[in-house]
Image: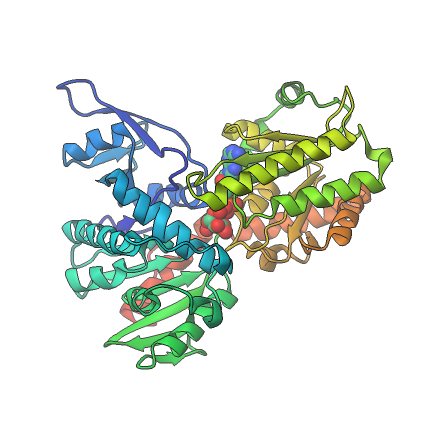
Length: 493
Ligand code: ADQ
């Protein structure tokens, strides 16, 4: 585990509130209720925080969040077992728009995913990104001691590590995990203030990516854009401005046991009520997609492949239904709004083409799915389709495997997801842009012999359980301790 002095700083996926607090007038402490958010980062980090018993510094824009921050108070969460401290940073709407919906998600997100044509530079966004990074760095400095471990999450804090390094004792350690891909130098060349971004990240002792190719791309960018840095590709180190940064690949996993346990608790009645809710014929085989509504997730390509599959396989009409759960995300950004419209109109078009009075080939819903319903769907889906055009890792693929307790489902997985490196040998690999190969893979998955399906799923389950979230966390802290204290440092358990 991690000692109590740990300071963990992160950003919460903004699409749903992480924590909803409401205060009874004049009677602290406030009562707090928690909604589980949608987004891989928070889904992954909450169990880490519970184990670490640290301080989570995050921002929020809900009224209730302001009540907490107005008191300049930290709260212990979650309310039922007070496992860690939450410190909220209040950001104005202008700051959120420029920092989060601006530089983070109109510049860094598309750029890191190789969508340079979707980068939108607006005049004040970069300055706000700097300001918010400074505010977080100052908050970390408030909490940090000589022994602190500061752990930053993701692309919203590219500048903060260097600022934190200057503000806290030298003996404290700083690490960051970058949850999304890192682009090639040719693409990174389009990054406004690219050198500043690289310099910011080189304030870390340890910088983690999901897979080697992103770590290598980062080193390539440092070599190209910071000529004064010394890059050792073999050791994965950069020396710059008197600081050494170790750059590593450590693939993130999920809390596999909890998905397994929750899936085993689902019963046939729960599944039937889901079938009834979505008007699915009771004998239909089920395909499933679960994604944020993001242009990187390959949902239109998946719909095109399904259309081809239904066109070529009329015998499956009425006997196979595809459920697509899509969670609206970053909807104020035009590229996301356009993408949402495209997905919805494609679903309508395909349903009009093949649907009958009793059956729709695609059940599309944007509603939030409760965790137990999600696990019921994962458990009973015959085919899970995860088809991103590019994805740092993709946790949905791993959640499905962990919840597939009857070992009778098949995972179709894009060869462009980070998760593919871990799961490719026993998932059915697809190229999401190859319509014909993708449609054939859907047919193959539905027709696969039960023994093969089970053998593949058992192998997938071993990988997902071996590399779960606890393993990822232990690896991060083990590496950080070694980087910070030298290779002979002991590892606390
Ligand atoms: P995301 O892009 O958010 O994460 P992903 O890893 O698939 O993508 O995680 C999504 C999470 O949201 C999953 O835990 C899933 O269960 C949940 N979710 C999605 N839609 C839902 C719905 N309709 N109802 C309920 N839950 C839903 C980013 C990177 C990924 C990387 C993660 C973690 O883009 O590549 O895997 O961070 O590093």
